[in-house]
Image (cartoon, rainbow, N blue to C red; front, side):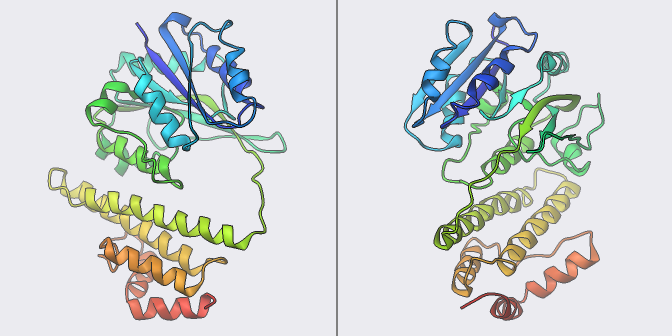
Length: 329
């Protein structure tokens, strides 16, 4: 019986991959009860050679290769081949703390959870670290409404155990057409389908901050920012549509409307504060939001200040005036 599948998407990960795989093996779970799936996403370095060198050492290591398509498509391939009752994702430049996942897996199994959450340790470039936490109480089982209203927002796809049957029965996969925020989109879909959620209150995952490549190519920066804004609209649309679901409680619908309002505000602020977008770019993005029926919008917020700002920006003429003063033509 395979209790757990750990999926590692790997692109040009030769420098870190052995550390990542080895840490996944050191989880105090019998080797015949879990599997590690590495998906080589068209790497151009020695990623494949590194992982192939570990096969003889780790009998539960499975390798798949594909043309480069991004982490979402790599994770989806891993899901397609996974056999474990539970699924966990680990990024190739991150790693797990020894023995911690065994405790998380036991919590998930003993409580028949759809989703079991564990905590991160964030390592900075200078070697210092900070442990993350989440607002869910240890040992309490939540449904999706209770967890959301408690203030839990999933964000990263890592740091969790997912019941594979839950993912499969709801046909949940990563959107391969979303580059920025694909984890948030996937995670929100998951959260809406979970009936049993628990915080294991175990720090098991180490997120390593790596220096980002800096480019002075303003054209590329603008392209990336436009794509980021376009992708954010997909999440806003998902949350907005979910807030109209009459099968959920009125309280939960109100919460989701408020959440959607916050996401919309973030989208508009990103346009107004951009250093790379022109007014034409911003206006094109506003037109796209309008075509998706995301602007103008119903303002729902628990914050007076936020609601006031949203009401002002909800007037299209005022928004265009603000953009005119803030952005270049």
